[in-house]
Structure formats: C-alpha cells, structure tokens
Length: 238
Image (cartoon, rainbow, N blue to C red; front, side):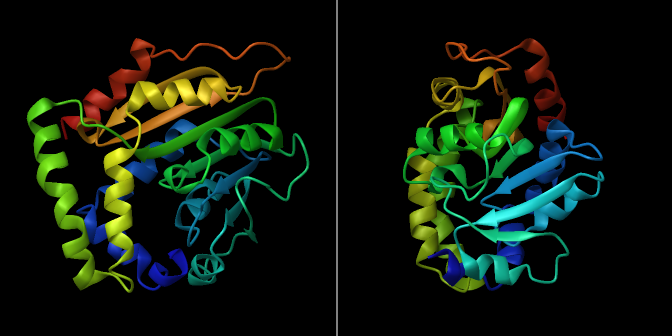
C-alpha cells in the first residue's frame, strides 16, 4: 500500500495537513534533540524527509522503512536508507542513542512488540520519540475532527494522492488509534520509562517521549509532567 502512495507522498502530506506537517517535524526534531556524534534510527521514515532534518544536527541518522517504494521516493536525500521490518530490525542490540518514528507507529501489526524491538536496538539510557495522530483535547474540535475531517480524507486523497484507496485505510487507522494516555501506557508496558507526552495542534497530534532504563527493572508507570504539556499550549495558540 505504501509503495502505491510513495509518488507525491510529501506533497500529499503537506496538502492534507495544510502545511502543519512541517511544524510537527520541527517539534519532533526539538524533542529528539539529536547531537553530533550520536546514532539515530528514524523508523518508518518513508522518503527520509525527517531523517535529513535530524542529521543536520551532526548526528549519524539512518532512515528505515518496510516500503522500498517509499525509500526510493527519497533516493535524492543523502542519508543511509535500510529496508527493515519494525518487528525484526536488522540492527544489533544497543546500536543507537535514540530512535524516532513519525506517523508510522499505528501502521505496525503489533504496537507493543515494535516498541520492544526499538528498545532492543537503543542503548541503555537512550531516547524514544514518537510523533503520531492522537485525540483532540478541545471538545468542539474533537467533534468536528471525528465527525467530519476524518471522513473527507479519502475524498481529498482522490485528487492529490497516487493511491487514493490507501487514504480510506489511513482515515480508519486514525479514528481507532489510542488516545494520549493509552498510548503512553503501551509505551511503558513495552519497557520504556519516564514516559511523557506533549499535545500539538489541540491534541490532533501528540509527541510521546521515553527513555530506555539504564538498568533492567520493572517498566515505569506512564506520566505526564506539567513541563511536557506547556510547549503544546504555546503551539496550539499559534
């Protein structure tokens, strides 16, 4: 399916999100805070548009995706690219300082298993950043989003996508995806700790971040520190 939407994928994203995809990538980059000398795995990277932005920090970043068509769509972007199954990553244990996935986690067959596999390839103390659709927190907007916006996505896809049928699936996956706290609990259950989230654009999108435990132990309970919510309030007011 994703091979079928690879052509014009970046343009379609910008059209369907009214350009907000650029802001969401910027916030993902800030929260990830990749540093020179670090190794970062950008999973479900698609055409690697986010990977090159992370790599601008001086970190060594690799784009991994199950869809070879998507990776070929980003062939002009000068970052390493690997065809990979998120449930069986072709990397050694503790190979990366951080792992990130943007708008891809909901497409994995087993969310918790994928999060455990991400933890396997990240060093103890390493970071996880997930940018994904979520549940709007402002009730009137949540009603419009669920009742109308998700229904018109397939219609818009007919005009801007190379594979319009795929956007029917995408709309359904967005409608059934866990809300912010539920996803945080899945992340914690998968073995990550210090789990927190930050709402973007009234909660239509949320950033979840977590840390791999420095030592083995019981998964930490998901939390939502006040400082994690504060930047979201600034962004939503823009």
